[in-house]
Structure formats: C-alpha cells, structure tokens
Image (cartoon, rainbow, N blue to C red; front, top):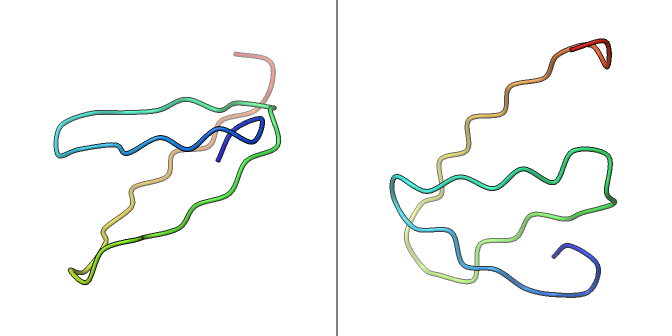
Length: 43
C-alpha cells in the first residue's frame, strides 16, 4: 500500500515508493520474490 491505495504489481513491473511510507503484502497463495535495491539519497 502506498498512501492507503493498493497496487498489484505483475511479473516484469516495478513500483518506486521512494520516501513515501509503504507496506508490502502478498495476497496470493504463490511464493513472492522481491528484489529491493537501495541507494543513498544523494542519487
């Protein structure tokens, strides 16, 4: 959820919440794989 709005991100898609408060939840029965890349805020 980002700003109390839910999004379903499919294979090959990305979402970029940055500094916005957010949560991650898998509503499906299949396994979820997440790749998270973090960089310093100077970029």
